Image (tube, rainbow, N blue to C red; front, side):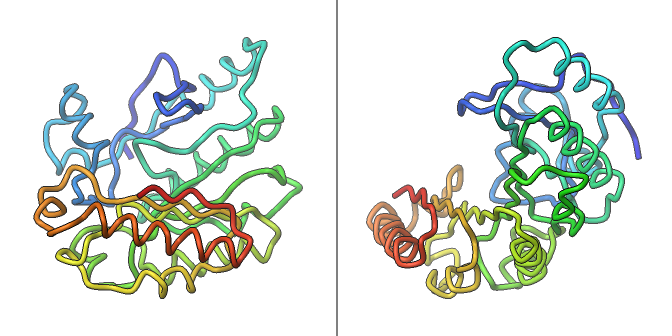
Length: 249
């Protein structure tokens, strides 16, 4: 697997939390379109979708992180993996291995990791002898329809496999999260959000939001009203189940 070198790794995102992106690119090739890909192309980090789908590891990631943590007086309480790539992308065990090493290093310094993937969360994350107990393990999940996944997330893990890996960690005592975004309007896919919610009713945290950066959403007659209704459904579901919820209309 090709590598790149960086001068820094840990940063505070515009969303207000700390992040690490230890890979350039993502093999999953999501076609929503992918905001991370659009930004990477805009700033000249990649030239094409094909290049984006050939991920490159940050070869000096562990060395950088160790140095950055050592010189910080005020360390963040938590760090997110990742905003612009996937920590457990399909077909790249090297990415998974580096992600797990980063999580272990963060935890060794008393910092929790927040993880979000369209791949499969490794079962090792439930090993509290190696990892801390305060990490959050999450998946992105916007449907249960495999035809939709193959169209929009062509190289990501199957939906049911993602859920099974997440549930295994939940049973192992990990804090679990499902991120339902970007949720499609009915003109893109007719589906029942309640079925998706029932499939992940075991989680501790749930985030819901709509589909951005796509003209297809704007073609739906009243997308704003649709998303208000779906967000209200999510909030009611989470309240009944005792799930911590952030549902944007």
